[in-house]
Image 1 (cartoon, rainbow, N blue to C red):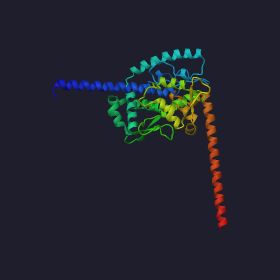
Image 2 (tube, rainbow, N blue to C red):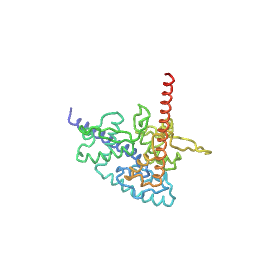
Image 3 (cartoon, helix red, strand yellow):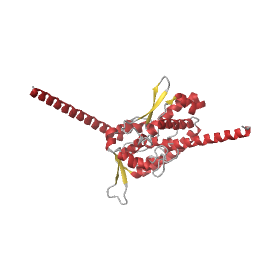
Image 4 (cartoon, rainbow, N blue to C red):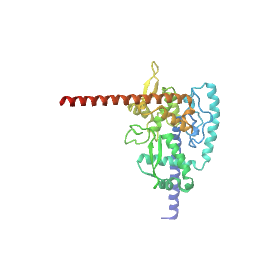
Length: 346
């Protein structure tokens, strides 16, 4: 092949790779906000992956929601219970901090590798392919091998907070990893085999917003949070597909969410609540732990929600004890009936 033609082919391939990496960066930034949106952080704070804890933690009666460093909008505005003056001042401070965080992340040489590794892990998850350290080094990390542990740590945290997936090392000898859902859901985070992409993160975010809004969240406030994550009702999402269908139909049909019209609303407005399956399979403490993880703190740092989560844990424990007592009583009754029938037969 002539030398000039080879040069053109190499240049074309480099442009193609650059476009692919840019698209991957944009996609991951748009979805990474998912993590922050669940706990009330500014969109600009999600990248770099929640490294900085917000200066002002929410207090009892206030709320906030976490996300990714793209814009400067304060996500807590969507679910805030504070007064407007406090919200305005806080938003100005957070906006300034968010802009600085975004600039810092762009200067971070590892930032792009973290984003690309998130993309790589999601692709492996989607295709149900094994995840190995060798592949991560070869296809993503490349010349940044000495920073592998830091890049993997940050990407793992993003996977956990944005998509509800834990990255676990399943074979320490061969350095093989697996992505495991954080919640023990009976639908394992997917709607069907065709979609086969994690929905657990989206569900955790919506459940978190509902929890923070007093266990009933207006639809517009849920979308206010999701919009700041780059998730929009009328726009297809590269991870969640049709997000409106997922949260108003799929997760409703699966009974993880309840979606109902607000009583006497004209024009009609809608609101979200936890569905019966969410109440059965997911505790409020589990959601609060997720939100606390976003802030790199502990659930008790949110006293108002922590007290409610503790009450929920106590009620669940009592319900489990009552269920065990009923099961034991039924087993005892059956045993007595069997013994009685046996004696009569003699």
